[in-house]
View 1 (cartoon, rainbow, N blue to C red):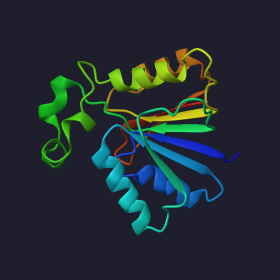
View 2 (view 1 turned 90 degrees about the vertical axis):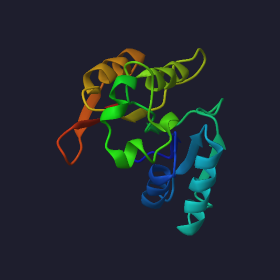
View 3 (view 1 turned 60 degrees about the horizontal axis):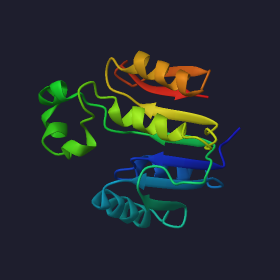
Length: 167
């Protein structure tokens, strides 16, 4: 079943939200980010692609009072100790706030899962999280404990466990 409402948390340039809007034209797509610059870039990309009427961009992380069929997030997941090991094209050009998530790299993911599980909030039908190398097992357990019993881990093209999906 295709999702009818999708939230892209930490949208950055809007790539995920815009791909979803293009692929699922009947879905209501919302994208959030805490960076005003990222939201401006995402809106510019939406206009350039003719998708400005398909995605609603909003400051923050999780819009209150709404339930989504699918929540996707590519949040910061780099541990502070790993920052210097990043490829220069990432480390030297991406804002550190878009990469770093405290000592183990999972603070932003934990915060999102806590927000999803806030009292009175209904969990989304499914969640998909991008994770860093070596984080999939721990994130899968966090997602399972949050209330998503079906867990799938998917690898990227390099064979690295890169996405954790919970339903």
